[in-house]
Length: 510
Image (cartoon, rainbow, N blue to C red):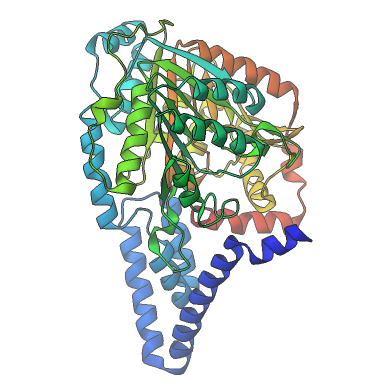
């Protein structure tokens, strides 16, 4: 009963209903005017036609164009209003300008190492070109002198995460999409509070939309009282806004500039299977130690200073240049993705991995809601004899999204892509591995939101220790999963197929 009451009167429900009522009132008002007055109806129809021309001529993904065109022409009043509030893929011009300025400041501190670039070029020209893309278009350089360790589940990550936090002497930076008050974050919070008392600088960023159902509205103020500096990305107010589309979906933890973590794991109990949600929750993460952590540090500072609008000396967070970093032999390149530059870094890194494959590409993703470019790349790879395998959840966290993901199975399977559903439960991991050489582990889902609307991050690797760790986890996961047959796709009930077709048409807007 307590859970029902909290759900009914919680922050998410109250704000959601407030926004829904605002939109409903605006829609009904304009609809009634258009119904009663012919000239208002004509104006909306003209606006709809003009808007469609504007959308069609924008340099955006064709799937977005099709979805918005369909919706706007189907119902001009509803379509125009929805586009006015939710059609923008980026932040407001003022916010975007501020973020761009901070990005230029931090980008100046991310210097290339020509010797490292040259070593990768001599080792593998194809991988070198992938690395150049990340450097030139995302702004994050290539590193060596960095150790990597991959975690196939949250339970294996958690002890190392705690030890890293306890080892902090200078600063701790955390940036997470979801935080939930429970055992996992409670344990983390106690360490952060203690470290703050010891004089360690502790900063935490969380996404307000991601935490709207898990944290109270005054949570950041409570953390500040404990000495934990806090910044909230895109505070969710009960007012219709065009910037609600964007989320800080990153998961970053940096300790003293020497140790960094990222991946799909948020600070909530289901991620370490302390509680059960949707069966066994499989997620993955990666730890890096060494020079490459600097890119994660600057990524965090960029977001922090965009939110706080502060100016500071970034260099004081640089690791000691004379410190002996671990030498692993591989190449490591953290990267960030932002909706501000209209460069789909996360998707292009995935496409580059698929297109360079010679033997296999193995993929973990919780959602499979992809555009035509990704479908073509996956299908062409499989048709060329590449072993392409994708693992999706066996138990969904969102049933409608699960149905939408399954609607993409048929063309992939027909082309030779092998698709598995993770039988024990829900897989939240976002990993690619290719040919025992290249892998990426990060926060980028194979869906339109992650690929086009969210702030994301990941670690691209060539020849690093973690590459084979990812592959080993893939092989183990295939054995625990059920392979989906073409017959499964062909024999879906007609109402399900109709629903899937409609959802696929609107997928870019969801």
